[in-house]
Length: 248
Ligand SMILES: NC(=O)c1ccc[n+]([C@@H]2O[C@H](COP(=O)([O-])OP(=O)(O)OC[C@H]3O[C@@H](n4cnc5c(N)ncnc54)[C@H](O)[C@@H]3O)[C@@H](O)[C@H]2O)c1
Image (cartoon, rainbow, N blue to C red; front, side, top):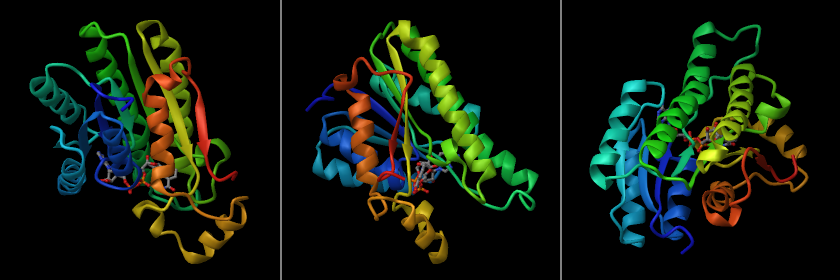
């Protein structure tokens, strides 16, 4: 139980990679705060893990695009546990895909707001709370995307947001290393979650042909890497990005 005694705060915890991360971190002994815009789905995440791993895990409603919603959630966590989380996973994310010639300004702004600004706000507010409480061992893991590294047709907004997440993570790691806060990104390839079920079959076939391992990833395969980055087995790793793509 490598994460026993650690409080973990996961955004986007109602689905896909965020939900799987809650399960894996709970398996490793962490107490889980599962936060999502969709509260009912976050409840389901917690109900499932509470049955299996009997601890006081909680679910909360959170909109990462809204600064006061984040303040409210952090306030609730401090009230409930008397301390801030020391494992923070930013998994909340959205896509609004379109070709650049047709991409609306609204869809550009919304994706940047949730994926990039949301990550910034969570990182800033959690890091301040950690420092205020005199804690000097914390790990923040931001979920980027391989699209942020190489781009992807139809995803100018999404790829830009995820490139931003990676560079934000790197920069924050430089600023916070001497406070005992490590920050790293995980860059998934194509992972089987509700986010990717909407990809048309033709596009899926093309993507598959670009994956040397010839299969899409499972959310647990991302969550296991997040668990490694969360715990002390990665104690000398900060500011890096780990690609989890089947070799894409
Ligand atoms: N699935 C993939 O292939 C893939 C690949 C690369 C990166 N990613 C990234 O992984 C992360 C998780 O994706 P997923 O595949 O699990 O997607 P998903 O759609 O299954 O889950 C995303 C979750 O984020 C929540 N969310 C959306 N907007 C929110 C907001 N404003 N505030 C709080 N929660 C919000 C949703 O309600 C949902 O529960 C995302 O950041 C995504 O960009 C996914």
